[in-house]
Length: 116
Image 1 (cartoon, one colour):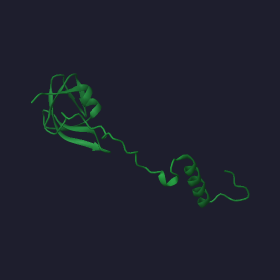
Image 2 (cartoon, rainbow, N blue to C red):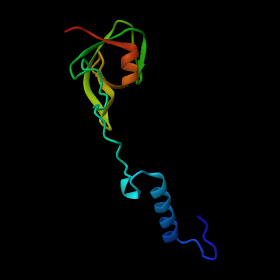
Image 3 (tube, one colour):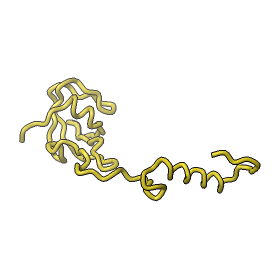
Image 4 (cartoon, rainbow, N blue to C red):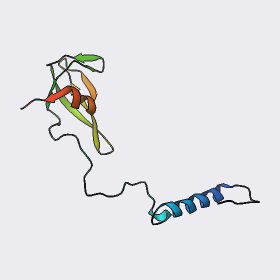
């Protein structure tokens, strides 16, 4: 869309954006939203076996915050950290009582859940 002879103003820019959305988005600009399209599946959550109170055993030496958890050592899950509906990290209680935050990717690769 080319407009000649007019200076660009914020309102004309908004009109151009709405017109572009109407051409690109099915259902027009009214169909555009920040929400993801609804699906039959629920968002992926952390494994069902990760919960507060669960004991985790390190399968390798892992650096957690300023501490290092040696292979075979155990920690306890103290809190689940959730962002945008997904569990992204856990707070674990170390043997000395300190609490450290561990990303779920590290939990999956460096720890195993102990059978209760």
